[in-house]
Structure formats: C-alpha cells, structure tokens
Length: 434
Ligand SMILES: [Ca+2]
Image (cartoon, rainbow, N blue to C red; front, side, top):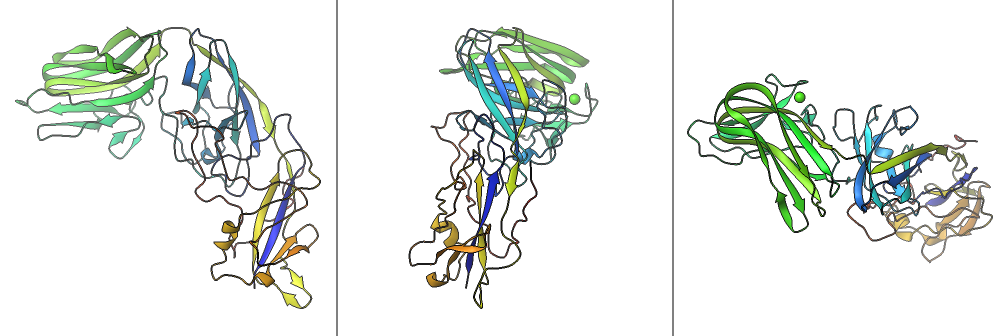
C-alpha cells in the first residue's frame, strides 16, 4: 500500500514585484534571495544581447553573490523570461559549481533601444538548485587574456589549433610575461608556413565604436614573422576586417603589439589569436581587448530582497486510517511565494506520481493527506491521482515563457520535480520564519 502526502509551504511575506519561482533546474526548493539590476543603454545604438559585466562583492554597486553557490544563480527579466548569463571567477575561469569568490563577475545580456532601461533580476540562495546547462556566449573583453586559468592542457576560453607532424601549440610555463602561464607555438625548421594559432572567438563588439587590441609576444629563431591577428565579423562577412600586427622575426624578448580598429556599423563579433607564419618558436601572453569609447551601458544594483517562508509539512508518522497503517508516501511540495491564497486547486501531474509507483498501485489505497491537519483530503479512485490542497499553487514545470533568442534562456528541467521519491526522508519544516 502506498500513501501520497502533501507538504504545504506558505509564503509569509510577499514582495512588491512577483517572485519568480518558475526558473530552471531548481530542485524541490525555490530561490530565497534576489537583487534587481537596472540596465541602461546610454549609447545611440540598439543593443541586442550585449554582455554587461556586473562585479560581485560586498560593496555598494556590486552583486552580493560572494560566498553563495554558483549552481543557484539565475537571471530573468520582469516577466520571468530567463536570460543566459556568464559567471566567471577573478581569474576569468567560468564558474558552474561551488562557492563564488568576491572579485568574480556576472555578465548579463542587455537588449535595449538607445537611452532605454530594463530591469533584470538576479536570483540566488536556492539550496536544491543544480547547474544550468548553457551560458551566455560572447564577452566584451578577452577572458583569461593572461592564460592563467584552464584545465588539462588548454587555457580556459581559448582554442589551440591541432598539432601537425612539424608544428604544435602549448599552454606553457616558460618565462611568461606575467603570472605562471602563457601560450607557445613551435614550428620546425623547414616546415611550410601555415596559420597555426591559439584563438579566441565570439567576443561581442559595439558597432561603430573604436577598439584597441594589445598582446605581448617573444620569439626564438623565427624565420618569417610572429604577431597577432583580428577577424571582425558582420552578418554577411566573417572577415570584414582582418588585420595582422607583426611583432618581428629572429629572437627577441617580450614586446607588445597593438591593433586599433573601428567596429563597422553592422559588426557582430571579434575573433583574434596568435600568428607564427614561418618557422621557429613564439610565446604569447597578456592579451587585452578594449573599447576606447565611453561605456554605452550603465547599471544600478538594488538592495537584497528575500522571501521568507513559513513552512509546514509531513511529520515522521505515516498516515493511519483506523488500524490500517499506510506504508509508503510521496511528498508533494507546494509553494506559494505570492500573496495569501485562501483556496486554490493544486494539480500534481499523474506521470510524476506513476513513475514512482513502480509496481503499480491499488487505486482504493490512495490517500491524499493535508499535513496541516493530518486528514485525508480525498480517497483514492480509478482516475489519475490528483493532489489537492486548500491553498497555494502547483510547483512550476516551465521556465521560458517567450520564444528563445540567443541571449534568452532555453533551459528546461529534465525532470520537473513535483514529488519527492519514495523512501526519501520527508523534509523537515519550520526552518524559516519571518
Ligand atoms: Ca600570463
């Protein structure tokens, strides 16, 4: 025999703006804190998903995400449509899991007409959230330009062209210009020249704005030349601009190369990377991509908002009906993060229950129990199981309410959690009180 129980969770405090509970991969809990971020396009051109980097730390003007879990971070607009984001640590490495250190940054996409402002919400503090599967592509600068972070043999955010019989790239520790790492290209004497490179692509540009790209290069026995290249893309031409700056040939210590360009009016992205055209060995380090025009976006970070929930739910005692003790139960978590609701119908999809009733069930043995009273709300029947409660609304199953765009989240939970699996301890209650 099995027993379906309900865990009811009530919101004790409602916020001025609706609390977004329908965010992706949240597990059985919800996000207990958020910060509003007002993005403004101060420029004279429209922005379509331009990444705005928000600093993380305890000071005013910073997102208070330090020391919280990276898995729980979500970004959405006022309508609840999720935005992809890019969370990176102080060294430029992407953070998907674990504690967020101060000095990290969160890049969020701005989609704004000139002089327009939009409010986004950054949610965090959900103890059951698990990592999101996709991230905002494109950064305004050159992430990990010092080649300091990475995993295995590859620096984070960079692509090393495949090695050939007479040439290869390395993530090197040989006398870097700064820090502990740089990248290195080796081409054997006598090899044919080719475009072997360490590259970084899909950096976002602001159309019409001036840019400067700088990098440090040193060389040993280079026959030909080494330096740095750029590919500026437009919708119809991935190499609308394609300059190369030569650092020289022969043997020399670290020297800086610089390229300046103005992004075309329809510029989209920048790809850039190393050049060793010829033979010899060259090292590269400390790359920067800078927009020389004043920032075209500004942001304002609001105060921390919290939703404090009063919780109640299942105790340790299983439901008993006369002398009949029910042996199994499936808790259903119901959350109301909005204003008080006196009466509401909650639907728990039958599929979510049936997958946990592996051996089937006897409809006559099904009971739906309100944990507040311990009384059965409804007897089992031959119809699909439905859990009903006096209040609150169903646990969400969807995340993105509008058509996906490149910077708009398209994530969905693989297994929307309406019910906890049998055999798992019932959640304890009363841990949050205003
Ligand atoms: Ca370095």
